[in-house]
Image 1 (cartoon, rainbow, N blue to C red):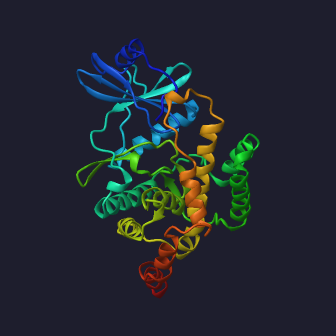
Image 2 (tube, one colour; image 1 turned 90 degrees about the vertical axis):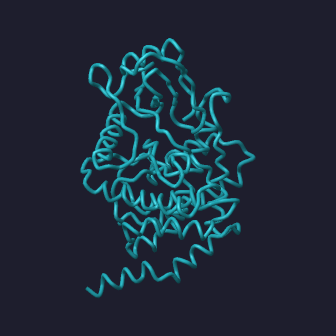
Image 3 (cartoon, rainbow, N blue to C red; image 1 turned 90 degrees about the horizontal axis):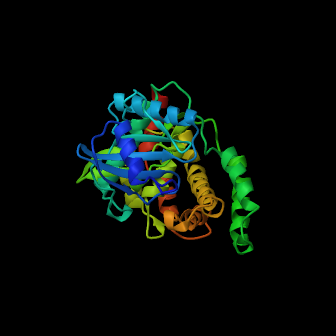
Length: 340
């Protein structure tokens, strides 16, 4: 949600006319995120959210819109794309696709402010997304699977400055490790792919919406959970077991894990940390833009997680692994299944 493509007041006036949103009052860019351009457009009829897809093709935009329609139809709290006066759900804007939705009222809570109650709700919501996704039969390619991230890394690696040689060594080793140990024969379905605190909004303890389906695709469900744990359960440079337990409890209130998923979970955590390290390096080093137009998301945030997951730094991962190894919930689930 950076600002790569500027929308002038004149542009905004034409956009609100095209989507029949009423007379324009104000137009302001939303400067956070790293992939797409987002603007808040306020009219006499309310506030609206304009998104310019900076990297997706028209086909990929259509696929994302189709998924959002399906989720909304099933009652999932995501944004609802709006129609133009010609009945389309996007317009062409400077060679890119621009969509509109009603602005979602609510608060994006800082990670530190998420309580156990919030985390339980988020776990439940992610599991609900996975269950609803079972009825979505169309395929959406995973743009961030292992082979794609490896390709991106090889492109990035050639252009990294020499002072990052120690980071390159770790990333090289991690790709070699995961290539042999990631399990692709795990339950798959629709995943969000970017279930971060700044992609959800609350009013008090009530979740009002999930945003940013940029990375949504058909992928491993346990990877989606791992990404959420990396995003939501890591505070002050360490994994917090209390946050992990609250989130997992909320998730398992709707969907229990298979034993193979739990066994793969540590490696999925590592791949998730690797994925965001690599894509954030790419966004910073390879994507040319005016630095004043974006919020720089430091790749070292996820690189530090990766070091902890690789046991090269302390940071609470042992607590989570111990909870998984000694906790009875998923093992009881497996016993109940095998005893039937």
